[in-house]
Image (cartoon, rainbow, N blue to C red; front, side):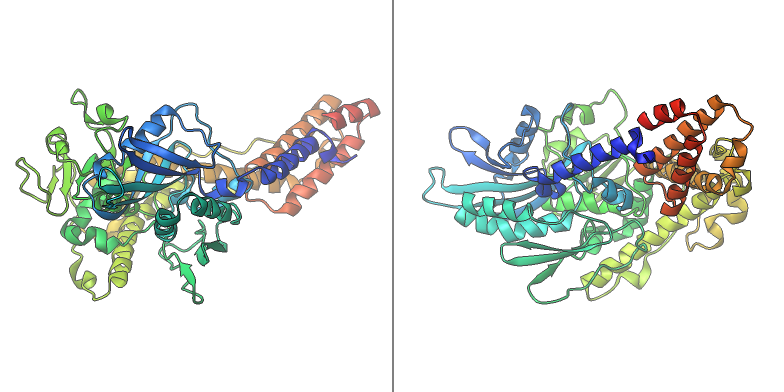
Length: 548
C-alpha cells in the first residue's frame, strides 16, 4: 500500500469524486462565467421588477433583488439603448458558486482579473423606446449579466449580440443563449477559447499572470470571429480624453486610494471612467472599493455620505444632480461632460491637494496626439504602465532582499522566516537605487513613497509575501529531497521517525493544496522516501501510519 492509499490518498480520491460530481451538476459550465442573467422590466402596477432570472434556481437575497431593481430606475429618461456596468457588495451569508477549474484560475490569472468573492459585477443593456401597444407608451427593459469576473469588454460585447435579439424574441432566445454558455469551456489563463453564441464565435485569450505587461492579445483570426481585444481595459484615451492634463494627478490619487467622485451625464460614461481609473495602476490591483454606477438607493448610501467621519477610500460614479451637494465636502470631484446641475462647481476637476503630497512633474507631451484612438489608448496605457513600474521596481528590489539566502535553508529545520518590511530601511534604499535615477519623472520621491504606502500597497505586499513564502516552502522541499533521510533515521527513536513521516506528509499535502511551484519529481521522490521510512518501522506502526 503506497502513501496515497492512506488518509492523504483518500483526501484526493474524495476531491476527484467531488470534482467529477461538480462537472456533472446542472449549469456547472455556466457558473464558470456567469452567476445569473436577469431581465428587469417596468410594470405599470408594480414599478421596476425582476421579470426573469436564469438559471431558475438562482437565489438572490431581498437586498440584492432591491438593488438590481432600483439601479435602473434612474434610466427612465434615457431613450434608446444604453450599456453600463455596476458593482455591488454581496449579501452576508451568500455562497459563491464554484467551478472545477477555479483553483487553476486563481493560481494563474493576473491579480487584477481574480474572481471577486465579496462583490457582484453587473453588465447591463437597457432599452427604452416608444411603444404604442404599452399603456405607458414606452417599452422599458434591461438585460443584465451578473458575474464575479471583471471581464468588462467580453460581457458588454456578449450583451450587444444577445440583447437586441432577446428584446425581439424574448424568453426562448434567452434560454437558448444560457444553454450555449453552459457549453463553454472553463476560463483557463493562457488559453485561447472559442465561445459560440447565436451563430457567432467569440474568440478570447484568457490573460495569464505570466503575460508580459502591456503585451497585445491575439489579433482577429478569421471571419465571423469576434476577438475581444481587452478583458478589462476600456478605451483609455476615450475615457481620459478630457482629463489628459490631469492624468498624472489621477494616477497618483489611484495609488494613494483617495476618495473620488465621478459626476457624469450618463451611466455609460460614469462606469467607463471609474473602471478606467481602477485599471490605470495595472499591474497593481486597485484594492479599495469602487462603484462604477452609484445611486441614492444603494445600500451603502448612508455609509458613503455620512459627514461624521472622513470620506471612505472609494471611487463613486454618479449621474444624479443630488450628489453635487451631498459630496461637496469630498476632497476629489471629477465632472465629465455637460451636466445640467445647479450649484457652484465651476471647474471640471476639483482636486484638493494633500498636505504632504508633492506632485511629481511630468508632461504627456505630443505622444498622445494620434489619429487612431486604438493607438492613442495603447500609448496612454503604456505611459501609465511605465509610471507604475517606476513605482514598483524599488519595492520589488527591496522585497527580494528580505528573502533568506538559500544556504540558510536546512533539511532538519523549519524554513527560515522572511524578514519584516521596514519602512525606514526601505526609504534608505531609495537614496542609492530609487526611481529618480532612471525615471523621467521629477519630484520628491522620498515624500511620495511615504504617502504611497496605502491600501493598494498593502494588497501588493500581501500577495508578494505569499509568493515568497510559497517559494521558501518549495526550496525547503527540494533540500529535503536531496538530504539522506535514511541515514538520519538510523539513530532516531520510533517517536522521532513517526514525527518525521507525519511532517513530510503534511508538507506534501500543503504542496498540492497550495499548488507550490515545485517539480513533480521532487514530490514523487519524497513520497518514495516516506514509503521506505514506513517500511523500516515495526509492523504495528506501519499499519497505523497506512491507515491515517
